[in-house]
Length: 107
Image 1 (cartoon, one colour):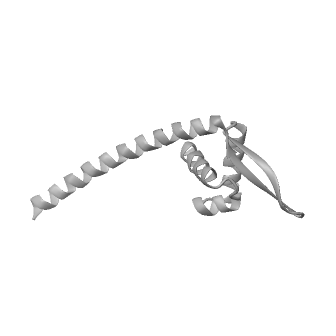
Image 2: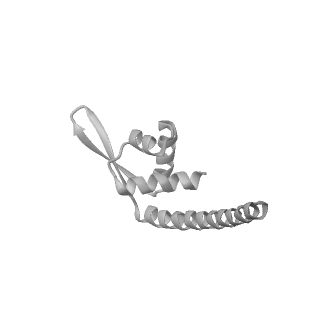
Image 3: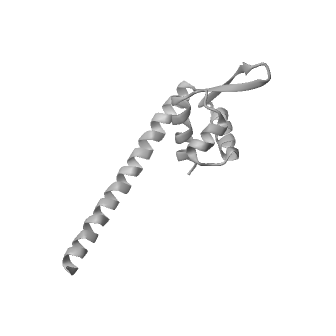
């Protein structure tokens, strides 16, 4: 799900603005290409800014900063994600209760 991927990336970028795309891919267990696509989409939407800084003379690196719009979207996506997970939790709790009752009835 695209929204969930965006939320996960934004959460990691907020926690560590200088994280590399390679590190993001490793943390989220996805391909580097998927992370690159996701970061580009977040930048195009205006939710993230990528700023260059030099770590040494031969290597460029980036700092990823959530924009005010990005922070708003992160909060909105977090709320949606939380609501969805709470519904899933309730469904699982109900299913566990039914299965427990079935085991007790068969015992």
